[in-house]
Length: 342
Image 1: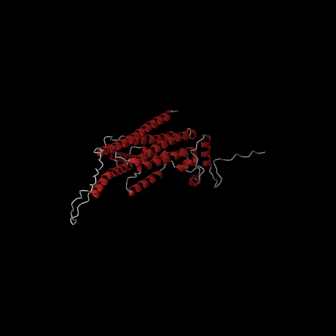
Image 2: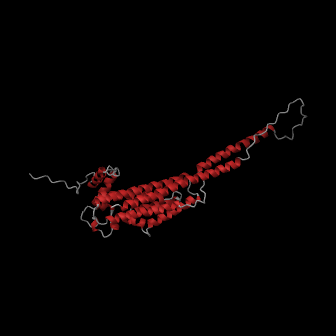
């Protein structure tokens, strides 16, 4: 009796959901107890994979196989995902981390709306580039994305030193940069793992990993520039502190106004038409009440409090920025240690 032929995993039934590529990605991550591919069975990924399959329906079409390419910049993500879904999915995650960090750094919340829209359009254009054309533009000396990063980080530094960006908005943006860098570092580690296990001995493997490593190194270097601030320039306190100070000013001025009102009530201004009368000796003169004394040091104490609040805000921001610098240094050390491993 003839044995039943084993199913060919390289070929899907028409319209099968999930596709072979989706199943391969899920199985690989499941064996490693990783939740990185938790959305691989989503409708979005199914539609994306089917569009790749329709575009590259002929497995022998030129440019589909990585070995047929002359340079890695010509690689299309769709063809790469069909042929090597595990490595391509790791590359996808790395690219998404890059795109997210682009939005944090290159879209300035303080700029005019038209400028923000122009930057958003520019970033969408970057995301449509083939993967390694994008990475090359991020790390090469004349790369347009690298130039935009340097320009944006320089602008951020000016806004911090001038006090244009302060308080909660500054803390939020620094925190977003930290989380973006952390995500980028995690994704490049996953990229190396996926490439090492699914692209053994394949052409361009080392070059592709080096391109990704160059992007991480360059972005960490550029980002660290924002922490080199001029500490001689004070950073103004956030709006919440100013609001509290305004309340204190009102409370401080209120006793003075009450005293003035009391004086007017007790000593009304004379009316010209009123008839003057001799005071009644038997009538007991009301005892004048002395107004409350206002502390002469109140203004100096208040000024000192404002100064202290600004110093406190600067100390908090300095701590955040130094912490971010230390984290970047640690990430660089871990990154280069990981690259040095065989």
